Length: 376
Ligand code: GDP
Ligand code: ZN
Image (tube, rainbow, N blue to C red; front, side, top):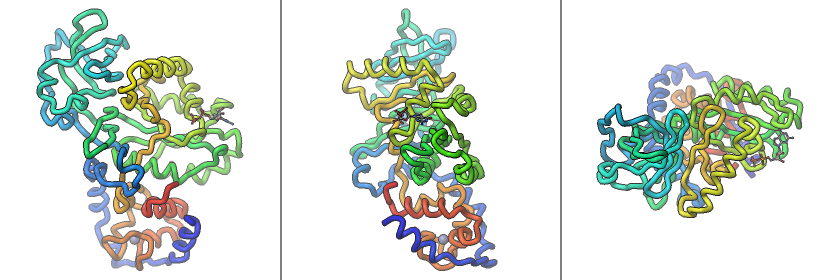
């Protein structure tokens, strides 16, 4: 059915270089879009019934906003040291210092009392200042402001899953299961909406002639997305991918079976063991199973949540989709109608760009799918 719609759309393309519409200032529109309040965008309904109850979304947020008050307290640098929260278990958390030593930490009473929601106070991925009080034990004195946040909204309340997620590794496979570029686009939109840097990785290139993927990779690379063709089985390109994890906190997305676990284990062969340890820990405290944990990974950190590898990172309203398509964005302000959806309208600069080859047809069709809320 989706195909039918796409070909109908294609039939409507018309070349039109309209000097009048060109005059509009699209740079200001683009920068406006760049500055979109992702938090606001993230709170909107996705229009997908099944996802609206326990939606997963990501957005920028500071620790201050999470608790509703400032928790940037002065701390004594003599007594405190910087750390990174690996996981949260009720009122205590595991914090790694810069040398990787893990402390079980409580949260300073004053921090708790100023927090309106203790669950929001500290999240996996938070950078903190903590004071060691015994061997492998400490107290968190301060939570640093957050950058990007992975969060989920349920009953209009937002729960932070992980803080300071730097990048999203989007994994697809060249075959078995067959490549779904639309799904990649969907994850790209989610990453763009939350300011998280996407990295595209297409695995299992041993199953096809990699030349087949050159046009697709070209389109993504042109937009500035790092794109890697890899084969875990043949160990192709794993080294170049490994470099990207250094010092970063990375979340992973992609449909099941594309080889995410194989890939992560191949990039860091100590991971397998650690994953097993983490799940054993989760077994003990069932109530913590929705919480994320950070796993040391390839000189950086993997943001691991139960089910994160099947993450549905999607919470963007249809009319916002155009703003998160980097290649489509320059044209949207050139359309005749300011609220043009780029589907049925006359004098649509986006369709014009597709017609004369400036905009990739497949990307345009992908935009239409996402705008119409089709499942990929
Ligand atoms: P996940 O569900 O995304 O975590 O995928 P898995 O890591 O469990 O892998 C799914 C299947 O794909 C397994 O049978 C792997 O052996 C296979 N696989 C992983 N990487 C490759 C690859 O590079 N080439 C081929 N041909 N198969 C692969
Ligand atoms: Zn248009």
